[in-house]
Amino acid sequence: MINSIKNFLNQRTGLLIRIDDVAENMNWSLMDKCEALFDQYNIKPLLGVIPLNADKALYAYEKNNNFWNKVREWQKKGWEISMHGLSHVYDMDTNKKDYFNYGGRSEFFGHDYQIQFSRIKKGLEKFKEEKINIRSFFAPNHTYDKTTFVALNELGVKHVIDGYGLIPYTENNINFFPQLFYKEIMLPFGAQSTQVHLNYWEKGDYNNFKNFILKNNNKIINFDKCIEMINNNFLSKVINFSTEVAIKGIRIFR
Ligand SMILES: [Zn+2]
Image (tube, rainbow, N blue to C red; front, side, top):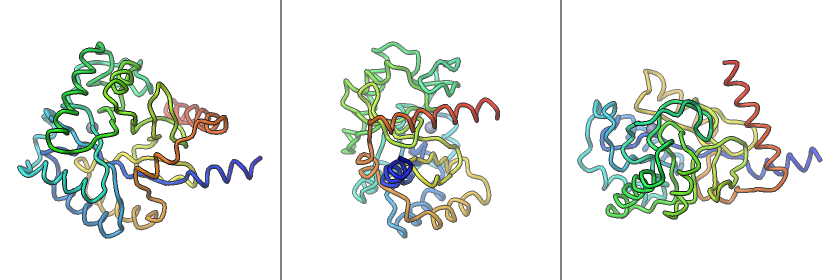
């Protein structure tokens, strides 16, 4: 039994590099450094691109007037472009009632279906206009409700880069790819996604990230590989449920 669990997890072990808050205004010098690093080690990250950014916190960074060309270049290199909200502006409180109980403010949670649907549709239209293929989504601040998933389904987006667990799984007709930690952590088994906020990096953070990449390079996977790891059997459910309980437990005691 233990050996079969070990084998099952060994076949589903890897780390997807998810970069958050990719927008016209961002820390381009760090983004360029990361791009060179990824190219050097043949890493294909997933980029959370904000299609119509209106988040004033990001306006503090330099604007790239060639942004959408850059996104098309990344896509051509085999990097996965994911939709990260629409404008990245929060206008709703979750009061911790959001789907993953993260709490905090939200761009999607709590809005009625029409608003959520039209926000997602507007973002998808922008990507289409810019000739970018989108098959995944993750909401700013990890905040969703069930209506978000109904709207995503209706618009043909089947993958969400968030969730608890060690194995990518399906719920509400959406495939979820677990994202557990704020810092880059490589677990000995299971599939995970990072959340890299390079706009908020402080001195030394790039070097820490680079060392993490060098150390774990052989375990870094692309998004297609993550999709192959989706599993909804009984063992996956037990593993994911136990992880969720453990992670929420850690959060309570933190
Ligand atoms: Zn964000």
